[in-house]
Image (cartoon, rainbow, N blue to C red; front, top):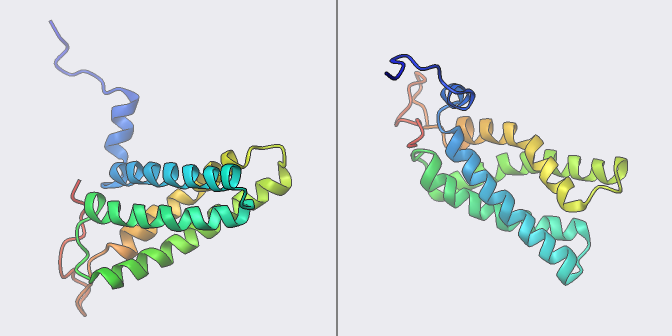
Amino acid sequence: MPNPFPLPTPAKRLMARAPQGSLPFLSVGMTGLATHSLVFTTLFHAVGLNDKLAWLVSICIATTVTWSLNRRLTFAPSGRGRVAEAIRYILVTAVSQGISYGVFLGLGVEAPHLPRTLALIVGAGVATLFSYSGQRFFTFAAPKTITGEPIISDIPVA
């Protein structure tokens, strides 16, 4: 006879505690990281761009991909127009990627033997917490009335 009160696995406990919308955000982030890594690696190794220019071009492409996916899959509409929302997304992403890039450069100095693509991935991981908070509570948060009430719901669709 199966136990009517099974204990949740560690993964289920973790998922139950994860902020709402964080799992789709992480999935989109992984897609963005894959895009960033693939484009960076191609530009750096196959095309021969220096690592800084390859990083910049690849992050611009990855940011476009993640904005589109987060807008469709992770967060409810903010009630702002696409341009206003894109500007907010770019601002949060710029700070997040500044964090990521700082880690990337720091690892280049402190651990020059570390593969550059791995340094890119470590930097992205460090920046993820700031990025989620900024996108959730700034970019995709619903505009508020003077009394502070949301005009529309900003609860993620997932």
